[in-house]
Image (cartoon, rainbow, N blue to C red; front, top):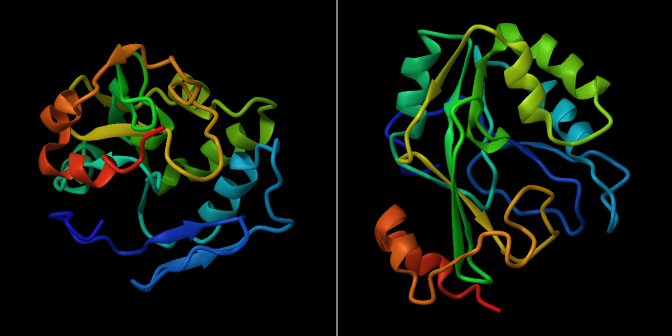
Length: 204
């Protein structure tokens, strides 16, 4: 976030774990309670709590362990001038624990971690989240918002899996799901350059 070429107006951090994550850059903190317990999926509750704090005219979903190119916010802002829902469709996932990767050439929707929308869409998206029994909101959001711009690129976001902390629910978190081996981090370096060294320590 500190390297983004476009300054962000508000950074909302939603954290329902104990101990609470330390924040030092003036983020607006939201701490839904009761706190998360192993086996629970609290994504919907947490997203709704975070959306209630948003003051700006757009929402960009950022996952704390994923990698984002420095110009991600700038390009996203330009696309939000074209459509009310934007994202990057060709997903890249990398499991740093297993040192495996996966590329998905999805031309119909973006993952939630690579999705943004104008705030005028927030009531509709909040209603979608409230009405779903399963946590894969991205598919339904992209299915119900017709005014969208999907970037069919592989440049801006890498979904990082296998980090310490609670286990994720998306594709790639299960061992072997990313399939393609990358024992020396060659693919990760191709994707994110020297930032790969930051993730090299997280191995089985």
